Image 1 (cartoon, rainbow, N blue to C red):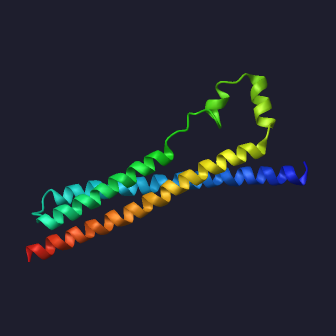
Image 2 (image 1 turned 180 degrees about the vertical axis):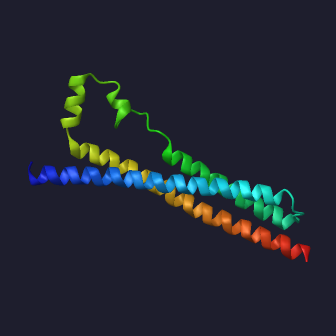
Image 3 (image 1 turned 90 degrees about the vertical axis):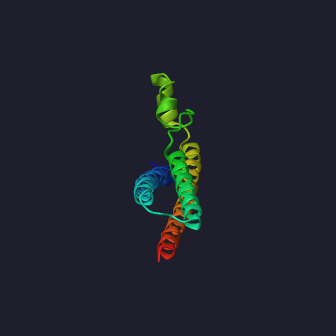
Length: 148
């Protein structure tokens, strides 16, 4: 195996590992956002909220729902057939051998684009989660301040 082939193989493995790390982070953040949404609903339904708290909390919850949507889009299966199983399911045994032994650089490019798209959605979801959580904290402070 030449140095170029080793470098391509290492780059391919690195991109696949980055996709796996991003998917793991996405799953954890999605679980967190779901727990915050459920907890907020449980707490808010029993509190006497004033109008500013309703508006702030509603905006915060909307941001969290948007974050959950981005996270779900990030982990949505890619069935376009460009990489992996969906493509292989349409090929014969000989075509699979050719595809696997084919242009590794093209696969790295495709997987890298997929990783960047996933990472971008994850980053935006983190930003929305932070903004939504901040608004929920502000709504809680408005509720406590209005109750005093």
